Image (cartoon, rainbow, N blue to C red; front, side, top):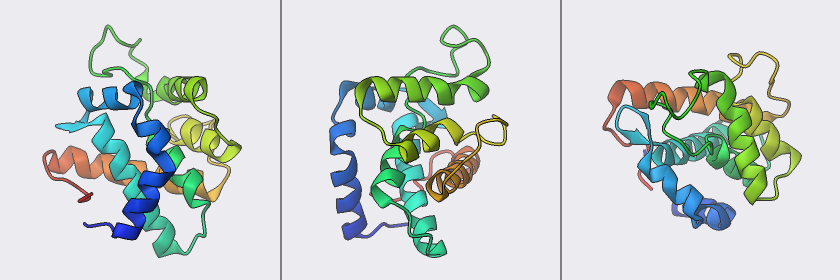
Length: 158
């Protein structure tokens, strides 16, 4: 799928301060699903979230949607390496991502809810409390499924 140049420009504008950090660039070295890097995965989730918002006419706070979607997996380690985490990655990485993101960036309540709740219902008590968080939660699962099944195919052309 291709995203519009207008959407691409808004995405770039919304996360320029994030993507140019060494921490965000390090996401290009970690594999998320199949052969997809964490960086490519979060960009897929950004694009999918924007697409879902448009299709549902949800009228999300688009900047918060984009920033939260990009930061939802900002945990900055290789989760496939058993020495890098305690084996509870699926349950604990939202908290780790939120802590790392908050240490570097000023986050609004919507962005924080997106990051902390994106693994719901696995993280049963961390519920999406706004439409932006619900859309990223859904988009993350759609992208993960796509990336796992089609491993080398780009979901979005950016």
